[in-house]
Length: 92
Image (tube, rainbow, N blue to C red; front, side, top):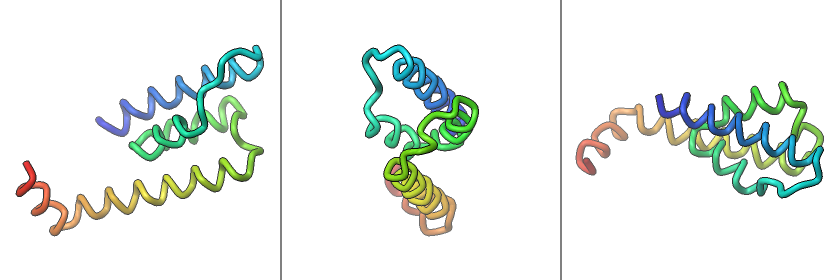
């Protein structure tokens, strides 16, 4: 549910940023878009990037985006591992 919720928020945020870019109004910071992806919104970001054709040309952003996807997946796999599950049980 976390990934779905954050992905929806991320998709809407990308949509707003695309609108803002075309309207020449206040934009969403790239760091905000990257953080949303890192927090689990990367599936929504991928859908938004392709659907809105937004943030697909800027190589530096794309590189940073894919680093956040990989980091998110590493953390997710660790949390799902036996060690991560035990760590969560201790922390909660």
